[in-house]
Image (cartoon, rainbow, N blue to C red; front, side, top):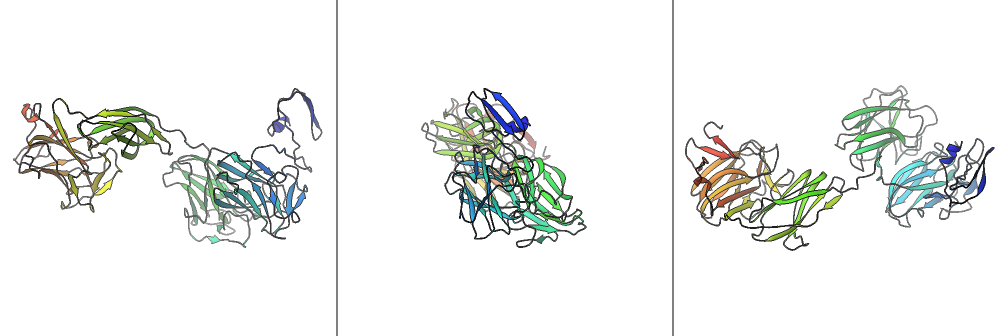
Length: 604
């Protein structure tokens, strides 16, 4: 008895006194009480009294609660299980009127679970309309007051902005006497529920379902109407109703509830099969739809991956009629509010016009670098929406001999952003006077047919801000990189493309140099996200030398960036005595691709 009493306590200031509590015939004495529960609760045939000091609860006797006309509403204690000292009731529509519970006890804006309390009776209406006004919106709930009396009945979770226009309103537009008792606004860290009604776009059926709108009976449905199917002997499972999953909080654990109409006699199936498809698993719960109607009935807690294939399916493979009305998905874990942790920020691969920025995060998140030439003033930005823990962004088209300042940013799947402190790098020419000319797909030296080559950021580790790609073709569509070389000389040519298994294995890059042309075939499914060498060539710097990529390949082709690298102050690769070929249109010559030699005749 005491343990049940202690679960429903109202705390008061610490005092030293002796007090006697009478509960029925029970007498409990104590001294030096630090917290006290005062409660007279419902015993058979008695009234139910609750203390009023609980946060977020608005009873019909509290300030702020209003009724439209005192002449129409009657105060009563004639039913068991009411909240507080009494409750209001009135005859429906004589005249039409409302009862309103304000949100005055809400502690600021945020998410709140809204619940309603009414006494225990079988004489109340089955189709009582409550309207929840919150954050500029209005949501309607229709319930049966003959069931679940004497307890809190949840309407779900809603966001309240703190406006004085937010409230819960009860309408008396029903067919019997309506009851107004108490409403609770309970703060929660959980987001609003995902509710799928039979009238929503993510609900679908197969077979022949019947619509039962007002004034059809029974009542106590969710939303505007409900669907039913079958016969007194059930169905064969060919009629299905599908509620696609609605996960407000993203992937995770959710409690799944179903709503169906209440009935006064065993008319519906005792074994309505609700199949929950979740995280690659299917589980079926049999529900007796003759009981627990007009309320959210739990099917259990399930893990959802939110992969587009999940939801709840009801079939008519049961022993009588089945009802499809609404399904609710309630997150059972707080939303992720912790941003990713950024660490190991580095700038590497510095040339006179480009740099590679890398960093790590403790969870999958996107990548962004904001940079500029003045501390704290970041005028440019490069990003990648791919969620990774190892991040890499290439900054190109930079000004030589210039100091740049930058920060890196990562945002996780829950939208929590994180930003690093400021870093810097200096673009310096190396002692060997190495010149690297990079032509990205966004630079003036790049040309392609915009209608054919698609701008994209969907594959990881592209160079700069994006890349181009197109489906394979006959070779008529080309992408061209024309460098503005500092001088004539020998240059090693590199290409850069993102990482993907969807690219061609035989992308043909043609190098036009010194009046000659040479084609190198590259497997773009390998070595993505790095510079891949096409070999060393002598360029005359006549303004028309270029690299050309044709669409004559076996899969989609990626056009991203090309780099021309010379070493004017040191030994040229061709002078080092190495076996690197000097490409040209000679027979039986090897070609150098991605650090490997390939025999043209054999392809090996």
